Image (cartoon, rainbow over all chains, first blue to last red; front, side):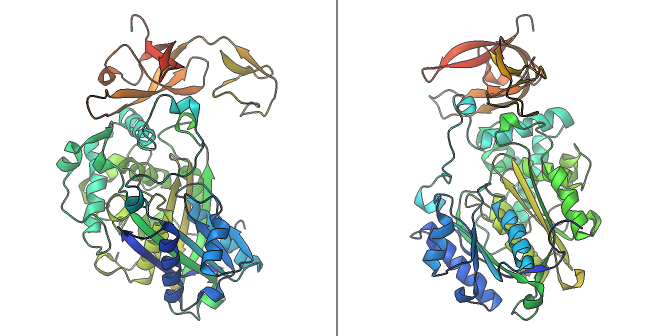
Length: 384
Length: 105
């Protein structure tokens, strides 16, 4: 056996706050609101939390800023900085620490006011990298564009297939009252939108929104006594092979190809059993790459896989049921939102966008420029 | 110039203190051929009057890959697989390695 104990820990509370636009809020205020809501969801309070896993992109000391702000004196803090995949990694660390008894109740929280504060992308404090910066790529869009161009060249993937990902996300968003972009969107509109970095138009790129999310985790024995149906961590894995796009070995294969089989093996489930998939769709090419790397289709077939509404509402594989980073919310780091949405789906509380009979879900995170891949396999009570 | 490990003969880029494959510290600088092939390309779209420009990843003949630009031709005409050759040009008033289409390609 490897990894934390299957179903030894569970997500017992999950919430979002300030989705889309939250003028007047600081990032930490949004995160605090989400934290409070997630604890209330679980039937717990701030006093129950003894480990704080936080992320505020602009605060290098968020590991202590966040507990102080919340009035928590934690036994453990952790604020790994892998970008958008940080939260899946935090959940795995939390599961291990819960299991070994170092902690009893973990809070994972994130907040960003990037839309209202700056109207631009989150500045993460990343160091300059002269070997790329001097050529003035658009960070991070050009890196993903290079991956998309290579995938198109190597496998014949088309811009229409990329656009199909954006359209599917929008169809899901229309079913989610919290989603930021809910208007009609067609393939033609994606193709004719303003080009950002070829072949990606602005509609191939994620939203720039405010937003916060939080989840609460406990051991499984305690989870059963709390307010919500527990969402069990059945498996999890991360992998990273590069930091900068020029160092990525093969732009058509992400480290998810290595992490996903580990997570599924730990969970003891096969892909065909997965009911709902929440992927980190910062750009349309992501979904194609990640579906391939997870193994839902062979490498190179992702473009054809997403055609004809297969991942849209009513399709055979529900993907990004909240509308994703493309149409629901993307406040700089999106990974925690895939976990919240997966939890909602597995509780059966996702309303009009509920995937039928969802028992097993993948909540995926991507960090940097396809650099850090992490996924959780989550399950409802009957999968224990 | 490009870094190479004496023991393995393997090149790498960007410059480091250790060979990222073996950890060897026996690195030396050797002349680079300047030859490469475009591995991928994108065009950074600018609002006029600012000019759009291409960003490429170039697979160097020595093995490593680097980011750069292809100059001397329209960004739209830069294709994956294009053989290219390095030269130095000033970008933002700093010297930078850029590439142009290999003569005869």
